[in-house]
Image (cartoon, rainbow, N blue to C red; front, side):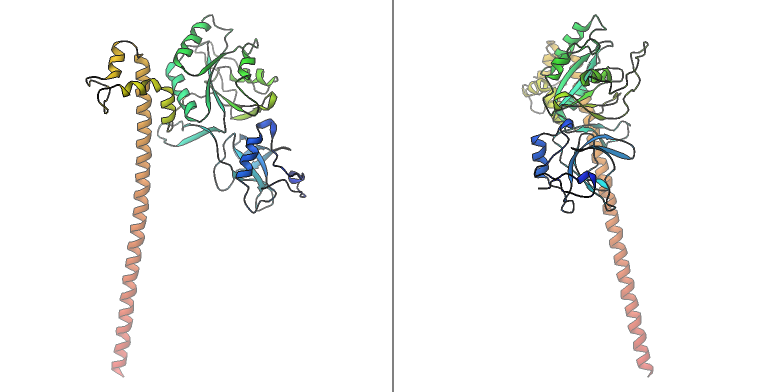
Length: 390
């Protein structure tokens, strides 16, 4: 097991028989066990545990038991994400550096924002609760809520819906009712950060050492909520435009914020779009009622369109299934299928490139062998002619 070891470097000046880490950033006994299981590289005997607090353009902000360190990005291995647990050791120049990223127990991800991409973007890791923020001062976007809850379920964390700005709208009760109906099985907490309402109930969902991430559009009141939970101004807040209810991106990067009692909150910039990435498990959790309907269809390969005995079409006709919910499910499934096709196409192109390189390499090798045999034959023929002249 790697422990702190005395060294001339202040980072490694403490000696102890136990793995220690940044308690205020969620380091618990289970985290210590993770570091004990996944020890640091053999060449890093004095490595210490740390957690990635924020990713900057050229540096990684990492918390250890003793300090906050700005370190260069690791040159190999897994690319770190906000929330990752890491071993901090030394690079070849003897400077503190991230030497290993530990396995994640959860990861919130989405498809990268630009349309042509089929790549995954990790928004945060080692998250315990994903709180989907829904402000009541703007119309509820049902499809957006479902999409974000699918990603939350798929991350491996526990979803939670947090309704904000309940003091600003006289229709708060109606919005809460719609959200509870749509997010069946997910806890819903109503808050007003300005008046302190609902904060105690929200904190009850964040046990000691747990990490909560807030997801929502810009202007949803996330920064105000964070300041209220932290009891201090840790995030800048901005005004919301009256015309469209949208706010400025006062948060520009994902960052961990320590809360009282050892809990941790991860703030994220306002998310305009949330492209799903490989979210089959999340779809099953969010649309489990539809999965049950499918099993009641007469045919196992039912396409749920015009087939006789289709349970989905019967539910739509009887109005026990919301047509909007069914349309949302189909849209998300089409999106996931399109992403899978992009991945398959990319894999095919990569395989074709590798195969082409192998063929070209073999062809070059064959031509080289033929030239060698030809040169050897000419050389032998030349030597034979010389012997005959003698």
